[in-house]
Length: 415
Image 1 (cartoon, rainbow, N blue to C red):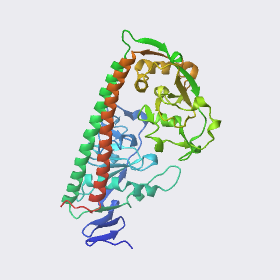
Image 2 (tube, helix red, strand yellow):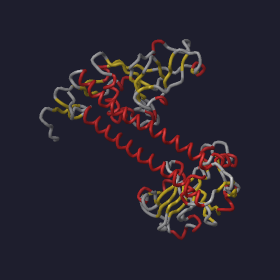
Image 3 (cartoon, rainbow, N blue to C red):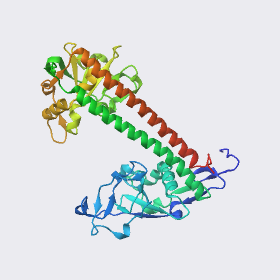
Image 4 (cartoon, rainbow, N blue to C red):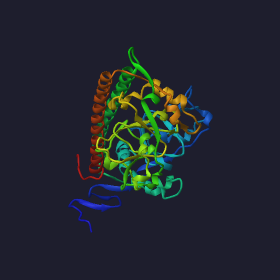
């Protein structure tokens, strides 16, 4: 049996202070659901009421980013949710997304709106629902489309301190943490925009640059086909095309990232040497669900020659001659002109694809080796600054999660 500290008690939601209470959500708040109006009534022009869908939630504490409005005709006045209502998604993969209304609005039936009574802080309840979102998701069961109906949602237990003042103090501390996180997110977004502008300017062809077709610089080869299900933590490093699409960076360091790289158990002799990735090789995807993804690529940093297999739906570019700096490779294919060529040569409807033959036709304008190095250094420094900010952001988010666990269960008291 768990030892319960003095001054605390065991409840349906775990150990909390003796002076705290636990009540069902339906006992402390009114819960309502929205409705889905006709599509023709969901427009941006000349209408009166904001309309929120699950896509508008989960972007931050407050619901500010909805641009959909309803006409009076399409608006069900019985489903009008007041300012400070908490909106919580209760269906599908979006269960748990939430936000606080900053104006009167309505929503579709995938969302429950919560109106706390006068003894409860909306901000406190918002954070408490966030902390307990995993427990709430369990109400949905294992059906194909998970759903939590209104009556089940009202059965959710919520712990809370004895006074609204303490609720407010907890919510204020967490709001301050949110503000710090939001400011850092905005700074990162600003830095990314600055880098994007600098990159386009630095990579813009200038007088004296040499125009080459990629087929003059590289030879192109296919990868070794294996499904995601065949990958594990054992075997040889394997580059799945989905990991290129999902990568934040345009390079991978095999040495430092080794433990994170999926592995394939296979005799290496079954893999063509042309599908093994060497230091400086570039790997393009040959399939994408959108035109923008057709130019997705990753540069391999593998000075120790670790066996690394390029996989399904990849095209490996190996240098014929060393005229493109390895660091410059990380950026030069993000040039607007290069991307437009990838889009031009991409074929397909639902899935866009590009062939080895067509990649070879794409033209690139190259500066001198010294200028390539200088450009890559500027952009690399920007990337390093952004990466440090992102690491700081991840740390702040972890700290906030810890604060929620401490404050919303009474382990740490503020009043």
